Each structure stands twice: as C-alpha cells, then as structure tokens.
Image (cartoon, rainbow, N blue to C red; front, side, top):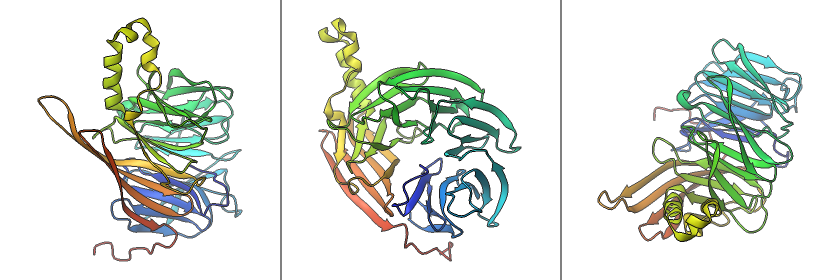
Length: 369
C-alpha cells in the first residue's frame, strides 16, 4: 500500500498481523492507532513516509521514506523502535523499496525486480528472488510460521502468480489466475486461500494454495474497476469471508462457505456432471453483499475484516446469523468501521459503527486512563 499519488493526504496504510492496530504514513510523518478504540497510540512528525509496517503489537516498525526529504530516501529501509523513538538498523538498496512484509522470523523487502528475504533477528539475507517487473510492489503474505507464503506476480502480460514458501526458501507453485495482469491479491493468514483480481476488476477469484488451483470465482461488477484491496476474514475465527474495495467506492463482501455449498450441489447435478468446468465459473450473486458509496468514488481505500462470527444450528448445519466488523481506511484521511449482519434468510443489513479523521486525531497522553 505504498507509493500513492501525492494528491492524497494518506500515503500508505497497513494493519498489523492480527488487525488490532493500524499504521498510516502521511506527508508529515506516521501514526499508529488502536483499531478497537481508535486511540492514537504513537505519532512521529519527521517527514513523508510511503511504507509503515508493524510487527504484531511490538515496538518494532519497518518504515521507508517517500523521498521528499534527502534523509528519507525511498531506497532506505529503517527498522524503528517506537519505545525509544530511534532507528535500530537501516538497510540500503540500489532502487526504491516498494513493499515490506514481516513476521516474527522473516523480513521481506520488495524492489521492482527483486525480492529479498531476511532473517529478522540477524538481518542476514536468506534468499533473493528475481521477479518480473513489479513497479507497484504487488504482493501477498501469510505470516503464520507453519504456512508462511509469499505471492508475487509471475508475468507482466497475464495474471499469473508465483507462490514462494518463505520458511523453506523454495518455490511452492505457480497459479494461472487471470488473463489480464494482476491488480490486487491477498493470502489468508493460514495460507489456505489466495484471492486475486486483475486490472479489469470485474472478477475476484479464490485459489487453493496447497493444490495451486482455482477454487471459486465471484463477479464484483459488470463494468471495469480498479480493485484497491482484498481481505480475508481472520482464519482463526472465520476464514471463508472475503472483502474487496474498488475505485467505484463500493465495499464488497463474498461468502465462501455458501458458495462452496452451491458448488457441491452443482457438482452433483446433471449439468455439473456433463460440464464439470461450469462449477468453477462465476457463482450466484446471493453470495455477494455490497455497500455502495462506502467511500467517495475514485478515492483509494483499504479494508480489512477485523472480526467475523456466525451462529450455526448444530442439527442442520444451517447458518442462523452472521456478523462481520470491517474497517476501512480511505486515503483522503478517514477511518470507518462498518458492520455487516446477515440473517438466516440471507438478508443483509449494513450499519456504520464509527467514523473519524486520521489527520486531526490527538495522541493519548495517558494510555492508562
């Protein structure tokens, strides 16, 4: 989520690995907020930043300047300690750093045509991946050590994806996701699913990482749109929910579990038996819920499903109710939290739980209160 146009007051936005905190970079510096309360926990006004990534809820940040000041070069990655307010270590590169991902064992640094994998403790380089030109720094990362994958574009002409095992340091598979080049992708945190969208933006696809195959397809809309973000539900609670934001300003939620049920029924039908490929085509819109005008049209946005719960009838396995808490950061400087509720008739209701400006927030000087 780096390198955004200078017309936006927010230059980058990211949530930590469990979505409990989020960070934004601005032209003045960077800020860290607690997601549940909206409390501004930390801010540093030292210049423009294009990348700010957290390591869980620790004091360690990975930050990259936007290049508007000589001291904040986009070719320099700084590991920063928020407790001391000072740098811990700096890594310099020949070209601009376009994306950074990290967990408790690994630090991943993406340049336009190379990706470096570091041991995060020693900062020794474990592997270097030569990639196709990736000027947007597009990638997806599943942070759990037992399913730690990195997904990268494998082609500039079509939407193919290279999935790399970051712990074993070897290629896992290559997935042919779309006919057009990729615009967005995300891995579920347990490494089970990979969701992708192409530059056309009409279809969102879900793939199984273990088999490297297309699993489900959802139609976002009829007309082309730029997909800004994709997010799975927390895999520890409910992985089978997918959210997307786009340049149309709408928020989309796709229900994987009900789509899988439809796929199972179709595969056993007469049509499914004579046209096996039909079950992986675009699924029923009943699995797709939309909040129109969630953010202004054309404004870049970033959404994550922070919480998801469902109530199931144990005797019939029928879902009686579903509720998702979805946080949206829009790059014009606002945070919103939306609630999606779905009843047993698949009737959806949206509500706005909170909204506030990220630019005018005042730091909490007494965190214990």
